[in-house]
Image (cartoon, rainbow, N blue to C red):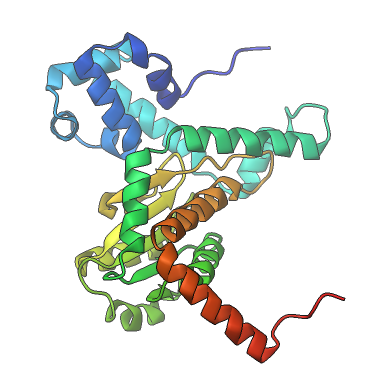
Length: 290
């Protein structure tokens, strides 16, 4: 069986320890902002990573490319390969799947996605995003696309228990103005956008950024265009043996983010939860166990 060719991102990680200090600084910048950082000019990349243009050239050559143009061509080819329809995605994997039960194959892929996602999360950035959402002076909004809007709704349902001032923004554009009029500089927008990236998510993120909102984006390894407007971006692995992508790793990020906010606001959250439980009891909302 032929060996599976490494992606450019995998090559960056695999060879990281062999790089010079400046090259590691550049590689770290690329991995934090992959692949968006590599899609601009060599000058913009060098400036963003605070290295010289010759350092960029040396790194891409170590990755096996003739030069920066060749490197960008490789990046774009990988991105295009992954921005495919569900039918094409099914055809790609269905012919060569291992002869084992779908439960095992799917679970293995999901566990691999989870490990890979958590391994690349910048802890300081994650903590900073949680701190923004825990700040009582900031309102928190959330939105998503056709599939990921369910993640935004799940987040808002729980966050409303943790703290006040949390709202879901509909994916329908006619609902945006009433939501955006409530948004002031410093408020937080949590946005979800995975392949195939949706224009309405990008447009809403752009409008929120113009309002002065701090955007936290949860996307996939190939990175939504909305990342250009995000203060913090977290990429989740989503590929599984299915015509559809998996949101399991995204769900873990969301639940961990909520747990982090709850930890930061526990004194207020505990009081809020006790009041809520009292209201549930008064309304006889839940059935009593027999």
